[in-house]
Length: 154
Image (cartoon, rainbow, N blue to C red; front, top):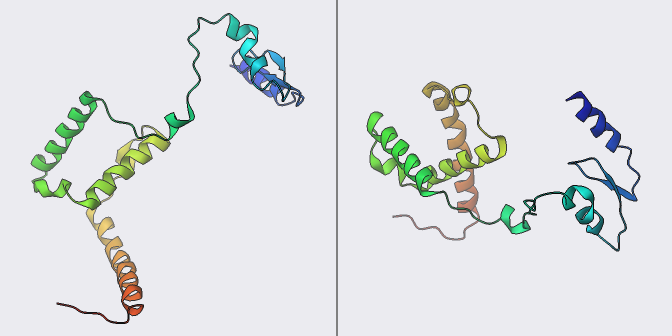
């Protein structure tokens, strides 16, 4: 590990006309006109088994689908949530639940696996947040209504 840190520190001082392979730490000349040609032809790549594959830019932005086994596992966990906590099935059909679900996926993608026991809050802690959310919602509604010339309520 110490050797790797020493090698990594030595890469900080690489002149701009060279690039260093992060696999074998080999210095390769870099010419702007050649682009990545030098890196693609250096010994580390030549000696590899051909398993190296560059990711396409779209792979980071395209919408991915979960494998069916993972989807089934999530469905099972949702059924357990509804059944064991005596929740109505409609709790999972609203837009807010979908937004919450998506935020969990986003947090997992950004931070990886997290011990959720440190993140769960008591119901009274959550209840303390309700008045501030109500005030924010009222302010938004008030701003929208006040910008209208005519309002009809039924």
